[in-house]
Image 1 (tube, rainbow, N blue to C red):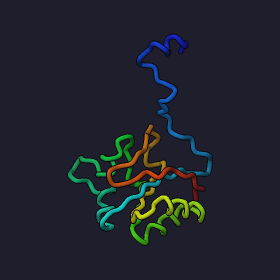
Image 2 (spheres, helix red, strand yellow):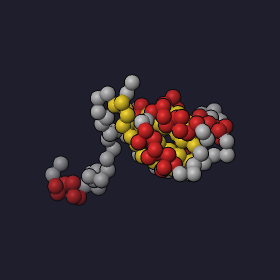
Image 3 (cartoon, rainbow, N blue to C red):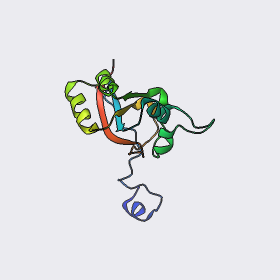
Image 4 (tube, rainbow, N blue to C red):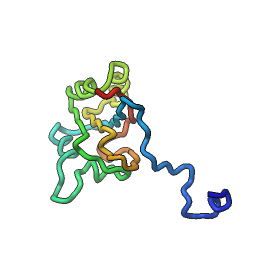
Length: 140
């Protein structure tokens, strides 16, 4: 696209609009981590996996406006299970970093890159969860 057309074409995408799925190196998988505080594990599970009514998205999907998440690729941890969940995916230093970022939260949600099905997405905080970021891990 020419410079002038790009400058004046309102339909042209800016360089700031990145709708591409991040490339993951061979043998790795990208995991996205959210943390929050729930009154009990049942509330966390309901938020991530239970449809409020037939045909409606689970609350996590509804609140995550920039992405659709396939719950098949979501894992949760609550209370003492937070560290166990993180230990299942990450190594020592990364676990310590994530625990520090969780702070006084009692819940973690780990989402695999496969949950987005190669569609463009953007992630953000939800009313119940803070988005902590993503990490690359070795795929087993």
